Length: 122
Image (cartoon, rainbow, N blue to C red; front, side):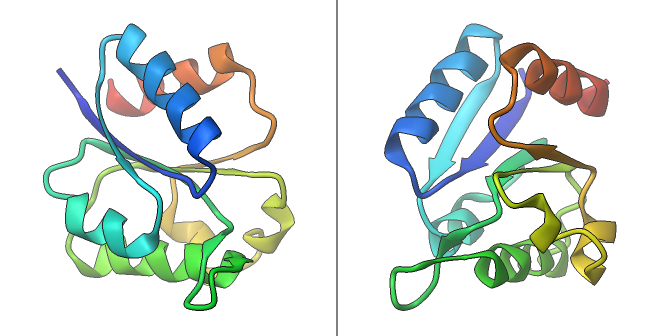
């Protein structure tokens, strides 16, 4: 069973992703912050993350998401990373764009998300 780490500061979205992925047969770990994500990355087979996550002031910040992407790679994690964002333009053209496998604009269709996950884990 593949293990997916889901990172999102919105607990409702986090719960929806968790339920969807568990129904699809994945083992799911969740994180609300970049710090939690780094502690829980372990042997994740895939990371599904929001781009705008809370910074030190608790404000949603795409720079924090980009720092998390770099941090994941700095830890040596080579798992595919899917970024879900309502503001994908924040990532396009940035160096971190090259470190992720897919960028899916929010709202994302659940079939599209599951298809992307399946493709990346196959």
